[in-house]
Image 1 (tube, rainbow, N blue to C red):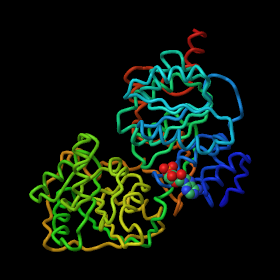
Image 2: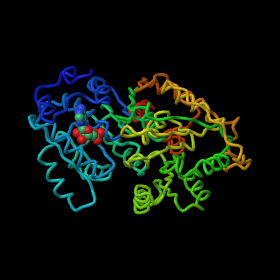
Image 3: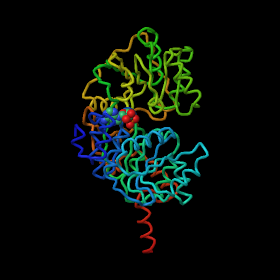
Image 4: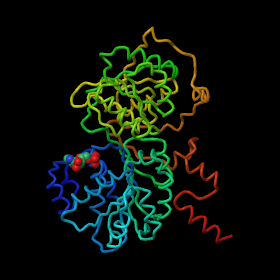
Length: 452
Ligand code: AMP
């Protein structure tokens, strides 16, 4: 599947691709085309810039037959109005020779009347933000029972924006029998839970940022006992202002981000961004980092993914990411445009298993560096470290990632997840409300009721 010829797409689509001047499919397009076309559930881990939109649009359009039915057959959900507009544009540039009706719906302006009118004209593909989409579904003008394929783009951002409830509400209106296609730039616990709760044996493909060869990045790691020692080590490294002139520090959570910022804040050259910070603050922090006013930016995975900053000298993973894919995304922020980059990973004893997964994914053992003797080893523990001493931590739910490079592993999720102790969102809800959550459960429960 290395060329568009291999895709065997209909001639109208092929002509549009030729008009666009695309020579060959990008890696995510090569990886996902036939799987999505095959009709099974799919999760793609790929960032903006990898060609991910066309990766799902091509197979969806290839499969879409002409119809004059009024209600849409494809639903694409996106977290922001900007992304909705971009997706609609991409559908339009792919379909000048096909008769496909696409409509973008989003809130924020007084356009719901126009959107309602457009709906009455008939739509094949509806693209929307969750809230507006749900409002339209409630108005009964939009009937989601006609949907055959559901695409959720930028799932990580969607969940980080707190759209989980909206998504679940929308799912309630969708037919049980449908194809689910999820795209996310990073893996997060919520993405994993959503996948686990609503997808059926999805096939998962991961693509790192295109054009970021790992050879450009020198990697090293430090074994560090705890958070406060990591902070001391970080301070020590950052003393070398020449070597560390533009540093992106990744942390696991917002709490970690704020705590680390407090610890390092004596130096005004540090900014912090995470999703609880207001947009204004985030924009300012990024601007300061871009123009060099601040030398160091502390960020969480999801929030960092949307920013494109040139000339980052070093990426420091203050925590070892739970999902190995996220490490690849993190270090891809340095070493761009043929410049050499440096990536440093801190790992505690309990994070060793995560580091192992990363190394397996990359097929590369990260060289270990010695901590300088000036770095003070702290015995103080954070509240989280106190809560979960190393020996009690259950890492059995860490998925094994065995293939390297642009990795691919079929997720035997339904079965393997059942064995793990991590409580999924749906499970907690079920326990709390005793309500059916999973697809199909409703029908099962109705059947049971009738028997009684
Ligand atoms: P995306 O990752 O979907 O945001 O796409 C990033 C950009 O890559 C968009 O401007 C696409 O039009 C472009 N693109 C998508 N597929 C290809 C391709 N096969 N060859 C060249 N450019 C592409």
